[in-house]
Amino acid sequence: MTRMTSSEAFVEQLVAEGVTDIFGIVGSAYMDALDIFPPAGIRLISVAHEQNAAHMADGYSRASGRHGVCIGQNGPGITNFVTAIAAAYWAHSPVVAITPEAGSASTGLGGFQETDQMPIFSKITRYQAHVNRPDRIAEFTHRAFTIAMAERGPVQINIPRDHFYGEFEARIAPSQPIEHGPGAAGSVEEAARVLARAKFPVILMGGGVSMAGGCAEARALAEYLQAPVATSYLHNDVFPASHPLYCGPLGYQGSKTAMRIIAQADAILALGTRLGPFGTLPQYGIEYWPEDARVIQVDSDDRMLGLVREVEVGIHGDARATSVALLDQLKGHDDIVCLGNRDQRLAELEAQRKAWESELDQMSAGDASPISPRRALRELEKAMPADAMVATDIGNVCSVANSYLRFDEPGSFFAAMAFGNCGYAFPTAMGAKVARPDRPSVAYVGDGAWGMSLAEVLTCVREEIPTVAVVFNNGQWGAEKKNQIDYYADRYVGTNLANPSFAEIGRAMGADGITVDQPDQVGDALAQAIASSRPTVLELMLDQDLAEPFRRDALAKPVRLLDKYKDFTVE
Ligand SMILES: Cc1ncc(C[n+]2csc(CCOP(=O)(O)OP(=O)(O)O)c2C)c(N)n1
Ligand SMILES: [Mg+2]
Image (cartoon, rainbow, N blue to C red; front, side):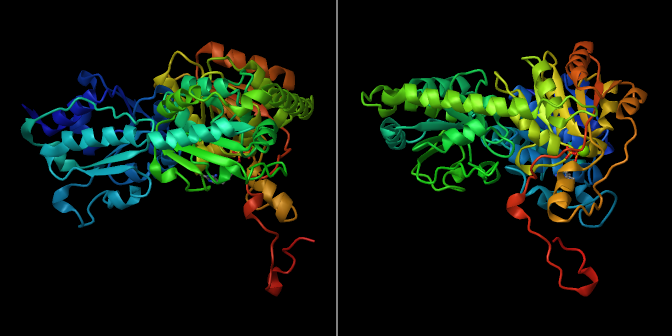
């Protein structure tokens, strides 16, 4: 025990948890602690909006495998976090939101910048600590950091601003990593029996595989069975795209190869995926989920087992440890059925892969100006350096990118995941760049969503974070306009955009700005932006072509009963 002030105990605990970077906006509420960030070796990355600070913390954690931390002023600074913490929750990112609160002496009096900060985050965090006494600040901080990583999600440390002051004897705990095991032995044995008997096993790998650091172990299992591997929605980077067993991603704008292969499976090993409902919806008119297949699901969160789809074997285990245990078990089987038909299965995979690639090539061949979205995505794909990290936003063009984003290393793809908020990609790519300055970091963003993010170009310049924003300028909130085209007889309400030059705005903010309207210049422009090591806004002038909408599953043709609205239907 050492005598310290509350701010010192808090900052020392951050140091013990390995914190070196915190994203946020300065505020009086925590200034006493902030004052000693520099001597503690902690950098405050000062941003333009707190939502983006929390997205940056998310990107930082996804790129580094460490905690991402954000902080802001009590009240409005903290409520600005909400959208990004919800996004981190569904991305399973260990983000630590430090939320200074109005002073405890005046709680409930409606003083300055007061709101009850605990209920707001109650459904989007894994753990909430309210620091009820200054002398417990290090203890609560330690607990929050431990749970964020163990349970893979955001946590909140809520600190009444007066609790940064005070003196006491404090103990600083070392950071405490918690390992998950392979799951119950009986379940692993049962799963191995199911896999050994299967004629056409397919492995579906989700984010849990890379979060567990288990990509190599999962790959070894796939190779042993010679089982094709599909990746779950927006987790394209958990298996190497160049591997002969890889089929590509499932879900919206995913790979037809993956869909046509998984449709043939008689057993599915769902590894580190909750089988999210949006990620397994029919696509391209293909009802690919094989309803009769035997399903084994492995997840480190027991609540995910059997949640969305019924499973025959549910294993509460870590994707890495369970892969190792399953492979061990399978090595004890001398009757693995699918090894007998390996050549037919691999030939089928190769045929499906060729068919989908040539379909993609055909769809991506347009050479007009403005550029067709698919051509732009193909050119970006070809020019993307192997070590690049790519974050994608929510929008029509960004979603189509799912078919064109291939990676050989885990920790390379940071999509907006299931919360699906516009404005996710750019700050996330910035956070990733802070975590991994040695790797190029690129965000794909639609022009509508860019309006939510572009202020952070200021941060890129001020804080020297050379992120590349590829802005798809199609003059529309395209993904939503597509619904008005398909369901509302082209009645456009709020979906057309009149844009300035985003490249010029970028330059005015001190970044580089490039506008490209010729398809054959896209790749060079990306290469130039990455090589320059300067924050760059790369604006691509696209045509207004739109792919399939997001939510055919959830929309219906309009019905109007009142006379006044009778024309607002479709034929
Ligand atoms: C914060 C937020 N607001 C609104 C939406 C609804 N939404 C989904 S996609 C989309 C349009 C995106 O337009 P843009 O960024 O220009 O990309 P495009 O679809 O044109 O490629 C909107 C408004 C959302 N997902 N998130
Ligand atoms: Mg757009």
